Image (cartoon, rainbow, N blue to C red; front, side, top):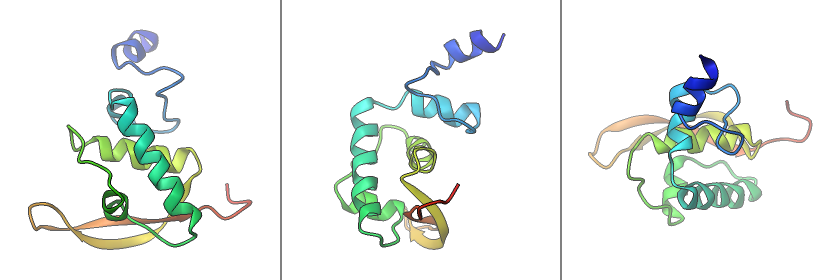
Amino acid sequence: MTDQLDRLLKIDDQSHLPGAPRGLAAAWAYTPREWQDRGLQIARNLAATGHPFTVADIQKQGMPEPAAHHYWGGLMTAIYNLRIAECVGWASHHDSYGRERPVRVWQRRQEGTP
């Protein structure tokens, strides 16, 4: 049954997010590869500065809005799972509707951090 579910959700070695809930892994699996690659590259560039960053900073670097809002969750999980950055806190962010929402603050992983 698990193999069938993985196939149904299109989860394979390329799109797998270890430790992520199946819904989030499926969202990442169906996210267009170009959007994934662009988001990961922007995150790598931001992390390389050593300064904290949020999803708003990724957007400011030219990351387009995705076709579905849940793609952001897959991107941020991939950033963590690929050891690009780790969550170091929280900040407020005003979404496109003007609502204030909490967002994670990310920073390059320190050497030796699990």
